[in-house]
Amino acid sequence: MVSLEELSAEYCPTANGMPMLGLGTWQNTDSEQCVESVATAIETGYRHVDTAQAYDNERAVGEGIAAADVDRDELFLATKVWKSNLAYDDVLETARDSLDRLGVDYVDLLYVHWPADAYDPEETLAAFDELYDEGLIRNVGVSNFEPEELEVAAGTLEAPIFANQIELHPMLSQDHIREACDNYDVEVVAYSPLARGAVFDRPEIQEIARKHDVSEVQVSLAWLREKGVTAIPKATGREHIEDNWKSLALELDREDLNTLDGIDATNRVVDPAFGPWN
Ligand code: NAP
Image (cartoon, rainbow, N blue to C red; front, side, top):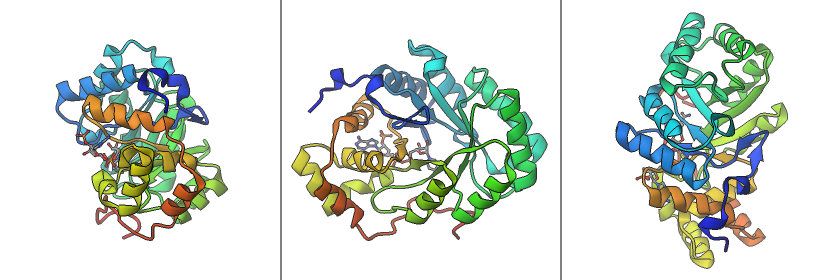
């Protein structure tokens, strides 16, 4: 087993330049705590941070980045435009507001947070194209897109769709979306990769964790990595941040992977009425 000290930023695989293990920050809203979580993660080796306009912590995320001793261009920073801000002018204005709050000149990835509310493929994506052409966003992403929404977006956006961020863990394998993403050459980013804690209660995951003497969380994250999926677990304190980082050293064997692939469950933990699947 590789120790934490041996795990450096270089150890983290990348997908098209995006580090495949990132830090999620939803509900890390206490500013002081959020600054500390982000700085701790970067010092641990994380180079990918995920936030959103709706998380109300972009300023703290930016301060955490500034506090860590790593150059901006070594980091992959992603944020998302909230569903009420998806009209053309609002995308342009609020994306700039996000950059201001984050204290950066560009983000590496800007997502459409949900295909809902003010989302209009022509109008919304034209604004994303404009931000892309201006260099304010390095990549365009979508989030919570089912194959139907992905197809429309791929036919509308001029820039490539870089990633689709969706809920994904061993109890929600989302095969149909991963297949669609593959077809469109779109990276998959797993949100709620720990099923918000539910991975601890699944007997198959418990058994594999016992076998390798690791946490259930690490099993879920290693399974995602094996699938070529980027994961952004949210962790607040050092202990969780480090535990999740150690998943990079966990190699699951064929038997483990078969067991995890065989979990027959649809345990969706983020399910608002405006989700396109509802
Ligand atoms: P998650 O990452 O599956 O789970 C987070 C929970 O697990 C927190 O309660 C955290 O506790 C705990 N945890 C983390 N590491 C742990 C460890 N090693 N041992 C035990 N517990 C651990 O859930 P999530 O926050 O829903 O998803 C992750 C990120 O995805 C979000 O933060 C956000 O950035 C993104 N997201 C995006 C969308 C979207 O619509 N695009 C939706 C949901 C989430 P502590 O906080 O106490 O460490």
